[in-house]
Image 1 (cartoon, rainbow, N blue to C red):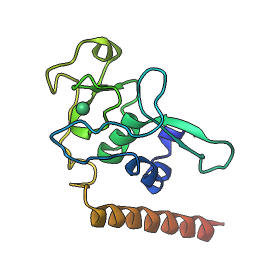
Image 2 (spheres, rainbow, N blue to C red; image 1 turned 180 degrees about the vertical axis):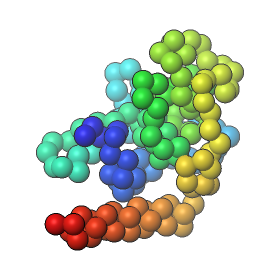
Image 3 (cartoon, protein in one colour; image 1 turned 30 degrees about the vertical axis):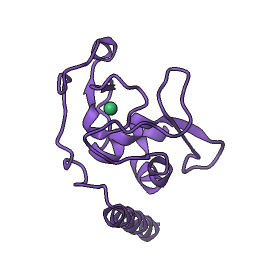
Length: 151
Ligand SMILES: [Zn+2]
């Protein structure tokens, strides 16, 4: 399973994402205060849940997954602000490869631009963040117990 497919793992480790966000002002770009790929995109390193060496996931894709859920297969996460290091979920949209290469000044020109609360609500307070992690951990634990019962 690739890092991006393991949504629970990404949600549980989302502190790695939030620790590199200096501002959560939804009106502005969230410039990435961490490692940048040569392409200018932010990068998050984490170990896969199965163990093994660190792998990387692009920060704006991580942001999308945290806020909106899984990325539609075959689509890109594009920036309406043209700032590749930006991870503000409101500046991201799913688009095709050609959308990704176009000059994107207008917001919402992509295929989908879901409302911010689509995946997990307004998620920008410490309290909500903690609660979200709890929910994910509870779910994991429940799934683990269910697996044990089946054995
Ligand atoms: Zn931006």
